[in-house]
Image 1: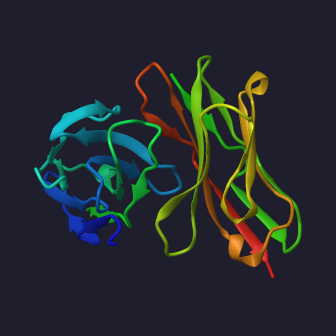
Image 2: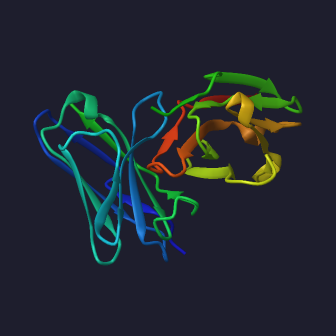
Length: 114
Length: 114
């Protein structure tokens, strides 16, 4: 049973560029949440997708957008990259949008913005 | 706004020592509480959670946590640590009946000396 997978593992971009990160949820899961984890910090909630809709959003600007596909996989897009966007981006999946359901995390994508 | 505070950023213990990691949150309403662990080179994973009922929660690998509502605390404990407990530990909270976004603390790095 495959767990949560994310691609790519590492990514280097320059300021102003755009990036797309991808996530495949654990088998049987239909909800995907994205987090940003800066160095020395805990994960910060970006947004959650369920039934192909953004259900909740954290305190992130509109430069951060996402999408969920019919197969429940998800993408995180970041436009106009800033140096401060350098972080580990984590995807977590769960079954249903009930917050009581355990989230399973992927290994993350390390984004470096130069 | 909700916040989570983990008092110890870095803890070093010898094997067989007792462990207590502090976690306090700021929210006056009903909350769900979590401890997550990230072992070196591994994904973030759930250690234990509290939603309701007995405020003393048992988790995996001999960990437990006690919810003390009057102190807004959810401290993690283990009576006798092992070298394999070396990891980073994150406390997290989400407020029920509000927006359900999960807020993580900054984490505590635990290093166990063999």
